[in-house]
Length: 255
Length: 314
Image 1: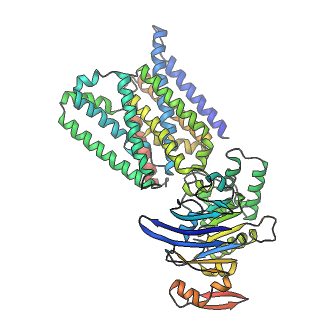
Image 2: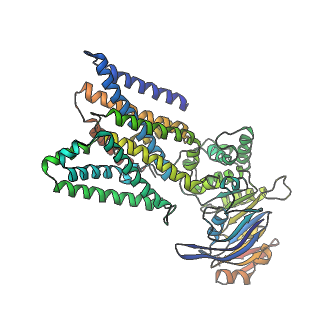
Image 3: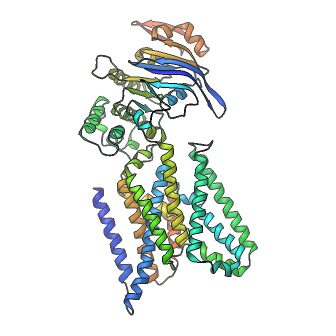
């Protein structure tokens, strides 16, 4: 479980998060939703120690994020941040291989190679493994980065807007692959926390939803409880219709 | 594959060194060889320092067009030279003891570099762009100040400053060389151990932290090593702005690898080969003294424009 307690955060004096307290369960996919500027990415970055914690506490499976050494956390929690260009000339296989760095620190062994091969096949990257990253489309790059996060072999994987710039084919395929890795029936199911903007992906795939508004948690619970016209209308400040299709909420936010 | 290319580079470097040492050797062989080996050692030391510092700097900043020179290093060096001439006069400047002046230059340049880099630790932390901008602005500031001082001083003393304005491999003080060599070797030893870590640093801050690196501390340490290398080489021979850019781009193009275990030695050997072979060609074959730096700057600058215009570098 990730326990977030009374976390407040300011960036250049502007308050971004205000006294956020919530629990993220150690199972399935948790989606962070909310309008732009609600503090979703900031919260994710604080959990992943990419930003220093100013106030409050974040505990991941019993380890305090601000006190645990970075290299120990890297064995519990992986982050795939929003991508900026990488200067190195990397092949897909090399990139996924970097996911094993916390385990081997420069000297990969046979179990590292096995984990990389597994992540590459789980994310359908076999045909691309020898291609250079800068020769791939945005969707393929994103897939390679997520595969690298999975290769890290951590219980927790944090994804910051993984569906950004993906068309519907690649977005659905990525969600399906991530979803498959988080099923409780697996030997070692992963837990994924992701920032999602297209709310129907949260409705379709997430097991748990945390809604943020103006730097505060406005609602959290199962998709059925959160994705209601009343909650969503209050969250996004607009009239939103919700239909039920095949037992799942379908949010008609575009009409 | 990359290893064969490294072997080839090593062979080229050895060949260049051999040519430099024995070409046109006659008369008092022992004496000439001693002079030439001091010069050769200086060229190798500067080559390794410039090549490696540029590759590390580019990895840390995640930008293939930046070199430490853009941080105002060469401008600071020139300001120091001009300032000394201004304060002491041309004669006083020339009579300054070599090793003491060298030590002073190195210490001041490292202090300036660390002051600049400490902006990373302060409120502008993680803000590489701000640091680079500050560097560029200081570079312009140093240059204008230098220009002002040069207008104020006596024309005959200006010619003394002019001598320091371009890199010169002509006269190298053995005491300075010993010190520079020691610093360079120490820096290389540190970086050799960090080669694998540098590969991770190249992935960018978020990914590197996610993989468990103490990124912020590591970057400061890497920049300190870079500052030491650049200071030593600039104080030894003078500013060479574009050699690093040229060499780092060649090393990346030739090795086509992300691994610093091959990039670092490749850049060091390419830089050393360019310097040794160039010095041999201009000094021994064409009998043109002290033009090597100008030629390197010309080709480096042209190459820099080519890279910018082709949009090859992000």
